[in-house]
Length: 491
Ligand code: GLC
Image 1 (tube, protein in one colour):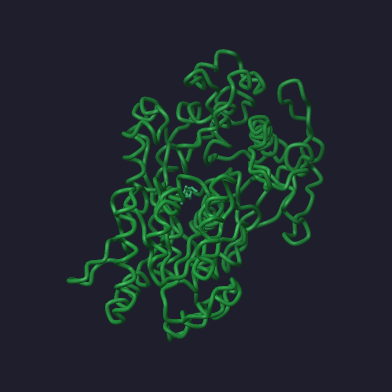
Image 2 (spheres, protein in one colour):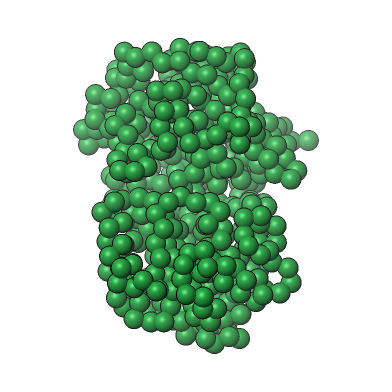
């Protein structure tokens, strides 16, 4: 039998405990997929103030109480708590870094939820988190073979491990996964000195006169991955997307792979989904009809089963194409359509969205909150799902949309390019409506194409079928991670 590894999966968001973006979903589904291969996988993440201990069955671990951790001149104490990820067949242990000052006293993950200001001490918060990860392993005497880090919040760990924080980790190997290379964890240079790393390490983190967390992770990890093959190529080449770190990536080219994310077919399964109004059995039209009417009802849109309904669940920022949506609004809402947008983010963009909603009150409803139940209901009840992203490392919602027979309208970028195949009305091939250029013209053309398709019922049902028959489980992706672990473990 193949060797099984001790794998510690480190992430700042883990569904169902905390979620701001798709990284939370991957931090649930990938560890479960790895467990299914027989590995001893455990997950660790911070416990933010919004995570209820009772609801999530989180309990204390008596050995892991009041462990001191230094961040700059400050000493804070960590308590580690525990819960689990549960799927029908597998259970994965989750550790929570608990500290009142850095996490417990705040409701947001990286931002204040009301003002959307980033917390001013985010660098300290994730220095603390990284050290707590190592302390947890040391105190538990459970030393991972593989430390799998995700995004900038965990990007100091590779340096801590290789700098000899404890020689217990001398054999541990490190994989670093990039979910969004535009957010690199960039802070004033002085913040570096709070890490406690020797000053010799500064050169590995200094970029454009700033302290850049991710730069260090690229240097100290044994293998780098990102969440789709196309996004890998894009960040190797595009100086805006990689914020000038192309040389650092190029050096690693041979140990840098794009692996398309998978999804959990238990959580995002319209036949089993407990969060939607009406589950799918064998009558797709009935499923869509019931969920659509219910969605219109709860959102307060006119009940109109026969006009196209569009859903969008973005983080409200430029990356997700919100600027493009606002600029195109008059052209889009010139048509007889309905539109729901659910998301949190930039207050300035939010006020522009509100102006659009005031102009088209019977057509457009934005909801500015984070609501996982509603996001399932939007996937189930909409006819189309919009992702006009400027860039998109993977884009899990395209996959969720296909599972729910909701046709994605996406821009050909990153993971959306790897998964969205533009529908061809002559051959009836394709599962999405895909447009190329990030501009009003291409975007509105895609919307017009969708409206025409919607009223051509036979053709419309074909594109839906094409999406429903796609398979996005982790089956293939997890094998690739497994083989990376095996390769680096032999080194
Ligand atoms: C980030 C990316 C998104 C990806 C997700 C999971 O949120 O922006 O494209 O799907 O991570 O990897």
